[in-house]
Amino acid sequence: MNSVVRDVTEFASTQNSTSSLAGLQGVVESLQAISYWKVFFTVVCVGLVWDQISYQIKKGSIAGPKYKMWPVIGPFLESLDPKFEEYKAKWDSGPLSCVSIFHKFVVIASTRDLARKILQSSKYVKPCVVDVAVKILRPSNWVFLDGKAHLDYRKSLNGLFTKNALAQYLESQEKVMDKYIEKFIDFSADNDYKPQVFFHEMREIMCALSLKAFCGDYITEDQIRKVADDYYLVTAALELVNFPIILPFTKTWYGRRTADMTMKIFEKCAQMAKDHIAQGGKPVCVMDAWCQLMHDAKNKDDENSRLYHREFSNKEISEAVFTFLFASQDASSSLACWLFQIVADRPDVMDKIRTEQLQVRNNDPSKPLSLDLIDEMKYTYMAVKEALRYRPPVLMVPYKVKESFPVTANYTAPKGAMLIPTLYPALQDPEAYENPNEYIPERWVEGSPANEAKKNWLVFGSGPHVCLGQTYVMMTFTALIGKFAMYTNWEHEVTPLSEKIKVFATIFPQDDLLLSFKRRDPLTGAVKA
Ligand code: HEM
Image (cartoon, rainbow, N blue to C red):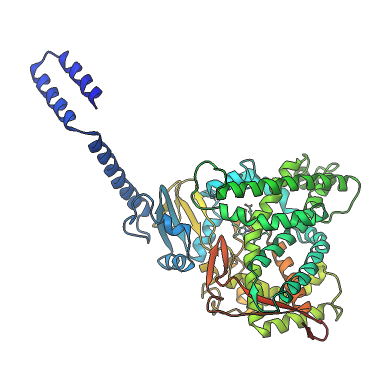
């Protein structure tokens, strides 16, 4: 402060006019009276007032706290431990509501039509990723592309998840299913068949199924176990706000270490897949299918083939395959937990699945899985689809506003805001689904209102970023629950927390799913301890 005063005094001394001298002297005296503390508090006060004013301007007429109750940070502390009930209260507060955390202004859209509109408005929005996701997935990753660049890249990946491509992965996936049927029975036997937490087992089987589908036999059993054991470190690292640099031994450090380790494994698998296809091998996993598409495209010049004219490097393949694991692991584990719980709690549904599984196999339970066989499992498919509606794994999909977006006639979301279309309320909307709180697989029979209104089906999102793995999910889970229903008898211990929802990236039963599996004869139904 003294140097400013000195400068002003020197400046004043060079002026001749007495009146201006007197004025400047006044300024000098005022400045001398100001302490650093006063300046500091003034800046803080102006900042706080501006924080509130800027919140009011962005909020406009939509629902949301009248003021930022916690200046600057907003409800940051709540966001570290999200509660389903708090989310629900927010959705119920209005079709559009808002909250402000630090400098981030967040708008939540909680009706079907608004959610769909946002998901399909790629002119105004792009997927919003937490800062740490860029560090974990690496900035060069395709998932961070936007607009045409994203569309073009996405086209080259679509071919890996068509029904015909997925049919090629079924053989190795069935082996994993058989193995885990034994594993779950052994695990239960070790606990005298008393129900125990299966949350971790469900995450493990999902990871093993995905890794087999993505990497086939190029990935070893030990590597699968290592990735399955460590993957939760990646989920745990994905907090909304993180320290800007990754410090050793923090959650983000462990998350990135796991991601790097997994991508290294994938790079080696990618080379093995290239070698296998170059030697004329048949594709049995996603990596093979990718190499086959590149191989087949060499001598063709149609639009589709041109997508594969360049050589995708092992690193690029490994990064893309990691995004498949990243996108699938939490959502699939959530579906697995709810599906096993729901079916166990409803013996009528279990019976129908079992009857159908034998019927489609002409009473030969050992008939291997195939695309045609799964296509015939109509009831089992509906049971999976209804579980996804009843307990949609992904509650919300955060997007970022690229340019001011007139979401409704009365509200324009400001550029830079986070805009979150919510899927849960859309899938529980009584106008779209009669008795939405009830689990009714039959609501999906062909020709029914729910099944006909395809645009309401937002479980996998909508628009250019719609889930790449949705057909994979439906096929894999239909096959999986069908096989478990035939070969095992599982019991679920219902607790007061079973139907309550816990949020851990996706959603899970709050009691972590207490199950016990016994071996079952698929033909006689006899249960063996
Ligand atoms: C129950 C399981 C799953 C659910 C509920 C689910 C749901 C979703 C949702 C809601 C989105 C955002 C869509 C949007 O922004 O419009 C998404 C994106 C995505 N999902 Fe899934 N997903 C599941 C499993 C999978 C699996 C198994 C894979 C891979 C094999 C996968 C790969 C992806 C990818 C790559 C994206 C980003 C697509 C893009 O940006 O173009 N998902 N998923």
